[in-house]
Image (cartoon, rainbow, N blue to C red; front, side):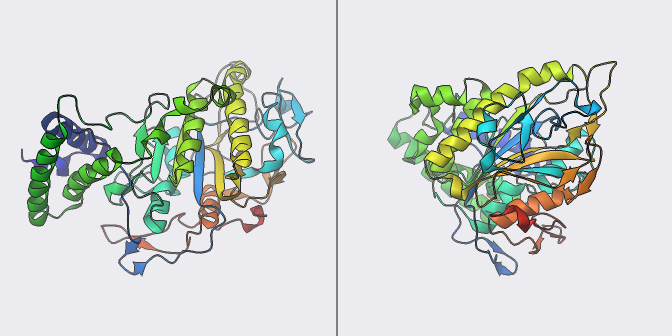
Length: 435
């Protein structure tokens, strides 16, 4: 099988693995799929018409598995559905949080709790994909997630760092979708380990390395001239992007060990806390979109025991992140998002002491980037079963984030197959969430 045939038949993860392995094995180069610099985000119709933005960048915290709203940020004190989880008052008059978030209770004045979330997807893969892309999961096409849309439409800020990074990500989380591979997120498996394979291989001198790369460029250019396909462009682009990153003065952004011990301690020593700290370092270096994933929220059984383990690391890291961004003057133009694919049933499954999937009414959070803090948007009934006021669909939620970033939610971009798509599908921005 030829290289071209291999690339055409492979899926996205396989293609990246193939290219990275070939580079490391033959040329002593470690590569990763990076967002590339653009002089302007262009489509068939010309430059994308951006709006005035209240946010320049996003830290997207994803609670994978379906976070229980009643046991986190939308408790219903006194209701039979609440179970043993107590509610505590926050520093925002009308906002209560569960007892598992005592640190966040001091920072809810910075947060908008979107209590009236609603999804039409009740399975994990479908729900995660829908939350990230605003489109239903299909076997014939992959849609871009918000980070890819942002970097496609607005372009990069830092010319040598990726514009889109995913920490602890999964299959149906951040994705470049049908956009060119340069908009795929750079995957970071461990925030503590940072960016791997970002230097020349041992035993490869600078002179040898430069000669190999000159020859490689000649081969890539000749092959691209003959077979100018998306897959072949991705093959050459990744080498150039990796080289740019290797020479960047900002590589230290990926090294959280350079933070003072007091800061590291504030965020916590668990993977999620370290991921949030890495996210803050990256957005300081003008990475536009960083996603950090926290798994384990599928609490069908022993929900209340698991909340005692799942919530404290999020409480610690999220409160530290908001305080840190605020102290550094970054919260004003950095939007912090906490999202999940759906919530958990208000009704408690007494046989398993758990809560099951519940897309009908759940909660997400927004903070910074022009968002009004200290409020709840939307309402559910006294037991949390139904949205009673200001329903927010997944598409509306994503359109609201896009609106804050200045992205035109009505703008249509055409996929390679010629079909029109929008950044948040049919979502309508909820402008009332902004201050």
